[in-house]
Length: 122
Length: 107
Image (cartoon, rainbow over all chains, first blue to last red; front, side, top):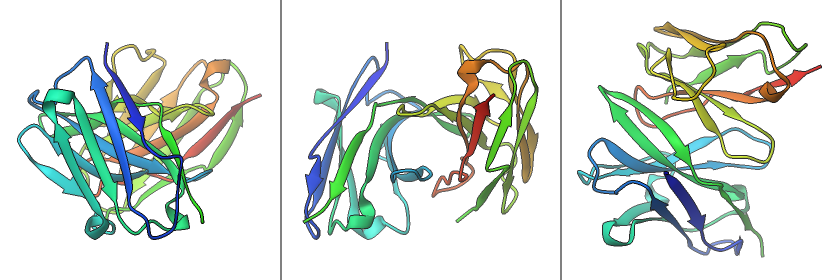
């Protein structure tokens, strides 16, 4: 059974750095054609893809947030970490991690964590 | 970035009805289009990937079609549990953008 679980702070202050951890089970972060993405959703709004990492060290970031984001993984711990610098109240959102599949150039998020709500407030 | 536009933004239908949700991409994305269902307070769940391939376990009354810039999600024989917000997402190129969502209410 594939599971993903996000963990991290519930509240961060403006200008602080957010660090979120996604702990996965049921698959390996070294599996071919599987990766982990981070996606966020402000309250009442649509989904926004942030970044992904794959076993072949291919990382990718949303261009609009690239200078603020960093993604890394610890395969032995089955964890993927996302850091986002210089947090602002507009970054208040539920942050999801999701397993990402790639088959014949088709790419989709087939399993999701429950999400963690992060509020940016002083 | 590729812009994804869904229509309608919301709709209301009765159990047993057939509904269609449309998603239009701002450029040709071939077949690289996925559909997700998000129920209130839950994480999204993939329904369709690659334009028309159903994720394992998705009922056959839910289907996807389309290519190029225009795609549709069709749900037949609506059930109360279909009440949710539906999102399309392009996987042609990063950033992998989502539509704004279509909220489906079952009367």
